[in-house]
Length: 151
Image (cartoon, rainbow, N blue to C red; front, side, top):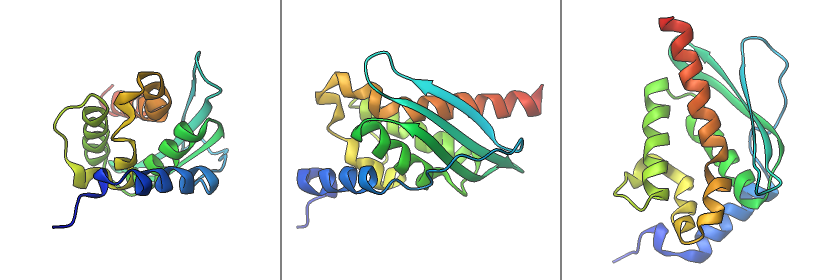
């Protein structure tokens, strides 16, 4: 019986190191169609900008730039690949499942893709802030987008 990827620590480490060494969607875009949020951390070097381009209820693009530790860089990179092309509702769902995982609650493993790499983060509470910094930024962006439309 094959074990779940979430039970294989070395695969999880490899995912994090891959995204840290080769972060996806890392670029700065100067375009008013993109919503931008700046997130920084009091306890780590993390200083990250997340940008999304919402269009017709979808996130047609998601990029980021800035500096972060291995955990925040990998988490941000994975987050951008997961939510790019998704609807705002889907992005919210993925975000809530990610938070459930960090809180050791039951969660939808399928929804998280490579973000499963952070399944053991709860064991190091000081790293949770690094793992979810860009997700908290995304949360702010989605709220901003909703207010913009529902005024």
